[in-house]
Amino acid sequence: MSSEVASRCDAKKLVRSPSGLRMVPEHRAFGSPFGLEEPQWVPDKECPRCMQCDAKFDFLTRKHHCRRCGKCFCDKCCGQKVALPRMCFVDPVRQCSACALVSRKEAEFFDKQLRVLLSGATFLVTFGNSEKSETMVCRLSNNQRYLLLDGDSHHEIEVAHISTVQILTEGFPAGEKDIHTYTSLLGSQPTCEGGNARATGMSLQYSIPGSEGMTQLKLTAGEDANGSRRPSTVWLVAMHKAAKLLCESRDQ
Image (cartoon, rainbow, N blue to C red; front, top):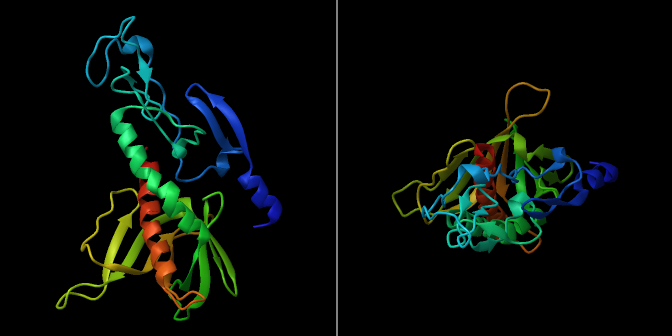
């Protein structure tokens, strides 16, 4: 990706919506695949009562819209102001109790896992059915739209075109399989068997615009400059979170 194209993809502008100030991509097509569109607000005339506690709206009981779901609530049921980076809000915004809970859970990804993905880690990378692996650094692009792989060669995978993520793990008790698979089929809720496994690699399938069928890529945790595999293991854990958010984005 040229520096000119990259700067254009990363360009943002400050806009004011009915819900608050938002820092959005200059071009909508360059938005993060983890982002959510602002919801349509339920019209005031269609909600004479709080949609959670059924309190009747009047001069004292004011009506508020949740910025995440767009439904109407009283101040008691929609009085929390919580950060909502998935909608690019600059400041915390008013959300109902259910949405606030979800947004707080997502905060860990944007505060921690996203930084890990942007920093990158070292992996042994195998493309397709090749028997050869290449040592490469895999990281998420600054605009969160691509997985960038850099080694002797350079590859870019558009995150929105990833269909399946499989995380290979190890660390089961004696008598059980040494290698297990965490599978997240994007478009359905992911499941995980075994709670004490350690991530050792990742296999993903993705489509390439203009070509037929799916392409497969396998990453095996590699050692960093200090001979540690921990950075790549932490990166894989962050990828779990990213896959779940991508799945949820598509379901919205």
